[in-house]
Length: 197
Image 1: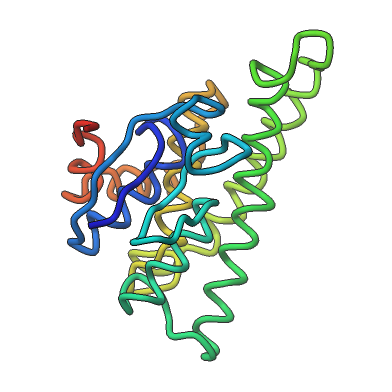
Image 2: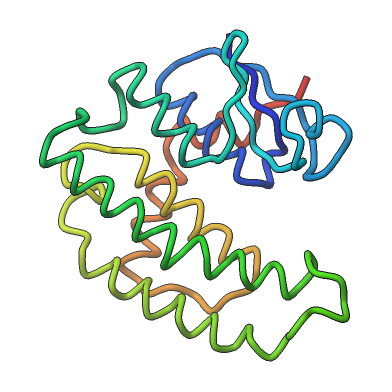
C-alpha cells in the first residue's frame, strides 16, 4: 500500500486523486509543510511525498508521472508522440498555472512579511487568467489530451481549484465548466473525503 504524506489542502491532493482514479489503496499521513512529520520523509520538509516500499518520492508531478508509468494508467506510454504532447502540456501547466499560483502564495503567506511584495499579485492574477483562456482554447475533448484522462487533467483542475481558494478572478466559462465536471468525478470526491490516518 502506498503512503501519501501531506494534507488534502496541498499538492498532496493531486497524488491522492490520481490514486483514487487508478483504484489503488493508499494511506494518507496528514502533514503540513516543514512539519516534523514531513521532515521524516523529505529533509526539505516539502509535501507531498509518496512512500512506495523502501522508496520515498517527492514532487507531486514527478509522483504522478511515476504512478502513471508504473501502472500504465492516466498517462500515454513513454516514448510515444502522445506522451511527448502530454509532457508538453504538463510542463506548460507547471510554468503557466502552478508557478503563478505558487508565486502568489509566497507573497501572501509563505515569505516572511518583510520579503513579500503584495503588489505583484495583481499581475499574477492577470497572467493566470491569460493562461486560463489559452488552456480553454486548447480543450477539444472531455479531457486536455482528448478522449483519455491523464494526470495533466488532475494538475490543471487542481490549479483551477487553487485559484478559487486564492481568490483569483473566476476563469472563463468553458474552463470553469470543465473543472466542475472534473470535480464531479467519484475519485475526486473520494480523495476529498479521505480521512487521514
